[in-house]
Image 1 (tube, one colour):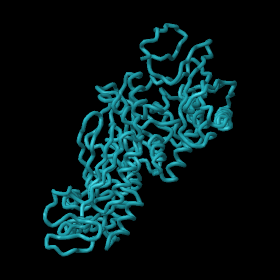
Image 2 (image 1 turned 60 degrees about the vertical axis):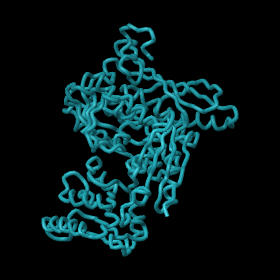
Image 3 (image 1 turned 180 degrees about the vertical axis):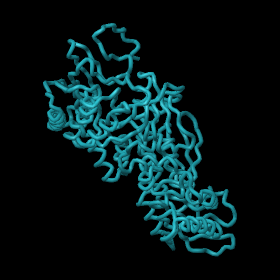
Image 4 (image 1 turned 90 degrees about the vertical axis):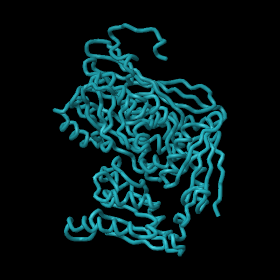
Length: 318
Length: 212
């Protein structure tokens, strides 16, 4: 559907819509480029303050995924007039606090009436034009790391069914609240070839985007993928959101899945994530350094695979 | 008596179809639950849930986007019972007709006993052959800690376990343990369970034997 928009050919547009990347990047000068991104969604947790926090972490994530620093943000909110306005106040406070944690400012925004509440932010960030990390730079031999465990979609579905164990709910909330800031700073400092954040398209969806943009194949080692506690059991119980099946169907033919792989495992790999981690292609020679630095700043990164020469399919599971 | 419980989940938002189906199954000792759904997500989730809970599930497409999922708890569907009935929760009936107490084995290791690992392996193989000679077979084998290696790729007792499974024994491997040993995608027989389920089997069985 984006194909219907007029094609842009501005040489200063370093990253645009062609390669399904996380944000737009526009060069202002030899040393400065501006990043712009927007994201908003319906509540994923009951508490309005926490919802604001998660939505903000999610919106800020795209700036971090490009290797940039967030600067400014504007609220986008939809709110029903039948709900007390204090609730909206809590959502906005949650968002503002998370933006402040990222070292950026909320400078305003816009709210409209809607039957279903929605919240998110349009975020502006800065990055050096030569150090932009797009999803198109992964090289064969790179090691793939993922900085947050998977499973928020499945756990949130189980919460709706009142079947999610407390430990799973707590862990899911913790990862959704976590900014990708530390992970991003490490990868910029130590060197990485490519990065994308894992959100609604699931790990395999975003990995396929990286593979196709980079002209490579990404080999994902299923046993290495970090999972939130209880996710396997909840997936086996059928707590799988419709989005996971939509992702799977959309990616049909682009992911090689070994025969005998349990359906609950593939469901987790297609599970849409909220405020997920960064998938980073790290050159082999700096992997030890990156792993050490990630550990030092408290990011629990897991090795999830390797970049290979382009094969018949963008993603291969092993 | 085999009850049939019908659950109409058309129009219900996910994950309500699984929840309603689960409630219906939990209320039955044995019997059939027939769930109606009107979308693919619900069809996939209910079927996955039923099969991973150890029940047989059959899917039929009805008119429009509607599917009927027939789930049999406690053995084959009514009308398809072989003489000498399948195991139920209160006891098991052998072909001879006498009711014997239901037995579960809690297997917490892949090498039986404390001592030589080689001997432990030999003993475990021997145990599995012996369990297969039981009539009726054990109600369930529950695998914990390194025991989960026995149900995964490369296990020396896979054939025996698969035989036990085809004779009606439930094989349940602890999910946390599979994750720990990085065997999550290597499970070859039986299904994944959690501590709540495993404890459930231990409590409801007449006899629980621990293999350590």
